[in-house]
Length: 433
Image 1: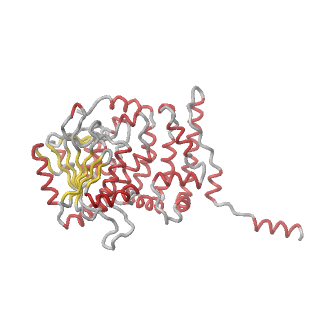
Image 2: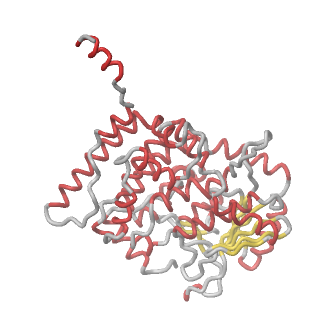
Image 3: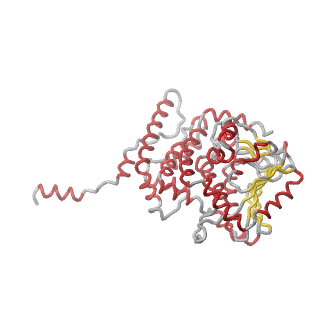
């Protein structure tokens, strides 16, 4: 064979690198966890800035191809944590490795590099891509493996006691009681897991026709023996670096809160409606702070004791209040929403402004009876069909996807900000009141 023919044959046989693989190989490695001190820290942070810009540019071009690779052409439906693990295996260096994530968790909070931000960059890239983002959002509406494992037992007994949540079925009503009594139902990753499990079970059980969410009685010294709805995010856990982007902040929004609003995606959707859903009622005793108030924006009917109040102090704590920035302005109007979100305005149930947030204000002594009457009213068959249409009109999927894409990065940046660590420590030291 002549030299020219040999070169031609070699040219034909050369593999053509996949554009995604080629782009991943060009990524600068993420710095390993610290601690870094002195002049090292600014240099490492500059390297992180360059790496995050580089990964953002890669995902702007290749997010669809990457997601198809991770999901077998969208034939698999991994949840957020599995998606991150799959990305590390399929495109090493694109996201922090499991070893890097473990090492960071062992690093003092103030010395961490904030790998949650890098996970936020990755998930923002996927959510910005409509085919990938829509598939991911839809996948997060599927029931969890934990709920599927508990389903037969719940169907048989009508009750499941989880660590922070109690689910009971009585006469067709799925009653979810938040019961973390020593911390005023302040949410951490365990409570998010328990709440999603309870919501899944309620929606999967054919005997449940309507759901109720309420806080249980507290053992906290200041509120002992009294029901409390929720004190919001667990600031002690936030201060300790135990609130993660994937395990709490995104899972909560894309998981149980959105399931309350839209319903479950199951393996056997009905031609009548693709999701399994039902109406939800919430009853507020004491207060619904932060995440507690966010939960109210995802249900159909809210009752509150006349001495209760609602607030979103996230800006004062230094973080973003979940999807409340997306859902609250259409409910209250933009001006009041800004006062609540940016200024930390507390809305008392008896205030005129509360009429946009609370459907019924009831004397505390009459709240139990009012809850039962509301459950009867909202079991009308027409309610389910109409709530579907209202929720589709109020929360277009494209708008929510775009919001959550940016939320993934902005919230990750905030939970690792120095001012948040200081604020969380101060807020955690004093109970609501």
